[in-house]
Image (cartoon, rainbow, N blue to C red; front, side, top):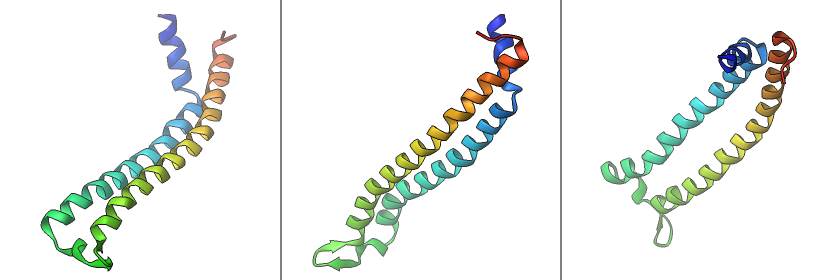
Length: 106
């Protein structure tokens, strides 16, 4: 029961609320972008001829789009890691705030 009370204290801190807001502001748009970009390749390849355009010799836009997915994945990963490092500060702030409200913490 005590761990439930601790969790409730953490949930009520301003730092935790800021953490959740910040995470949602990044994760939801990033996930939507990733899904659209990822499923765009099979959709465009199957239902359109847009990716059939030759760029250099036999290299078409389909190949460029496919390789861009690797880059997109790494870019999103780096953006996430840099944001997650900032979230660590909010987690620590929430921990300190909750300990202050609870009268001692650990």
